[in-house]
Image 1 (cartoon, rainbow, N blue to C red):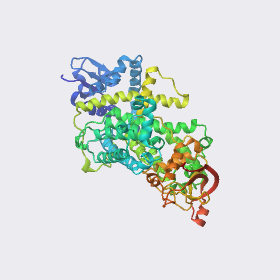
Image 2: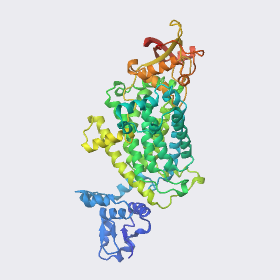
Image 3: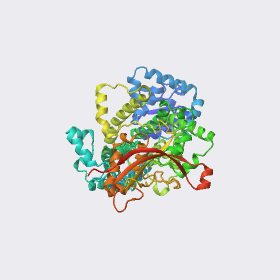
Image 4: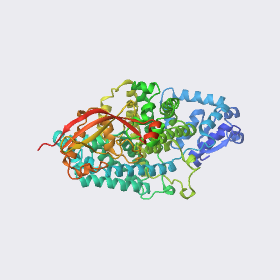
Length: 607
């Protein structure tokens, strides 16, 4: 006998199903034989023992049964951790054998459970089609993010912009010295001119397109992540959104997921690292579960009373016209929708780590929620990125039902470079799970004290945004205040600067703008939640308008002072609300507004 033999009960459908799965894992390294025909080869083991448990017989004659036989079988396929735990972890062997005995006594029950959880196909999952599709979508997300930033770069972060990146880095270097390089890791330390800022955006958009086209995905993912990290770390208020750090975390994992070949293609890709697939599920779990937790833990009565959607559709930053009609749905629908949000965010994430069919249910629920969010509000690339992460809840067996024949292909043998990346991903997994779990527990228990080395490592990694905390809509806003910027040449007659996307004209229909993100319009929504003294960037914005900054003026829908900048500016605030359906039919207006008062008093430039 030249190879191990796994002897099983050939009359047991449950056994045959799992043997088929194991055979796909081990290939020709192990022989599989039903005891009904193979018992005579091993007379030392009785047929009664063969019928009660699987046996693994080694070429040297050693035999193992039950859970130990299964774990040794898996170890021969490269999955060594169950056998390691069986032999090294106190109590693991006894618990494993007890569970195996329970399954052996209740085979019909567990056969049915197997069918419910896995379906008819029990082969080991593969993810090379999932990876291929995810990287194409990630490339489009990067293209959208960089392209959106490029169109606003000069006005937001340029020399004549609202928050000049070069001035920010210069001030950091002056006050912090060499420590600034670590606290704010960015390529713009080499130069933060307007050309450099625009060039990084153009390069990012071009590389995103290359990722979509499947050109050198590994190196491209590395450069994309470095470029976007550089922009986020100098963007301050305008690059501080949760989807920005979500893209950084997802993009960093993609460095270990993507094939490091010039044109890998489906037919030439290496095996997808299983640890990276689990890391993406862990990221999606934290995103969804933390978003549900913060809603309850914030103490906001609107979430607890299921009335949050009475306000959400018209108070969110940039509603759509679909959101207008959703706001007028009956109260019972709104409350049912809030309850459904809690179910999707708090219950379904636990299915992410279960077998194929529960994951498919979770995939459908999360994608459904993200689709509704995208239809009713503009959240730039967030919804598409979240749906892209949901692909890791699927596997190739599911995608094959819809996969074009022209894209058929399969993986080749894994190369040493791929194994090295997998090892690095395993190290990252320890950090991601450890720090992510600490952040998650902190939602319930407050900030947890970490051991000093771990706390120092966490602080050192924080500027790189490798493991982040999430939590969307923790507190529901119940009113919508909109800031209007008004200019005047004489201090008596005032004209309003129209914004491109945020509500101002009452008869302008709320529009779709995603995946583009008008970051100034978004920041104006946040500014309205507090006092002007809490938003120094807004004073910079007004100063640029007084100076007649062309890049900043280009962020607006129009310039009411084409012949020269105004001498005076002020900011006033209005209370906005959707019109009723009857009001809209009568007037054609989508909004009503009420003047509340002054947000920022009259300002002018000093001579």
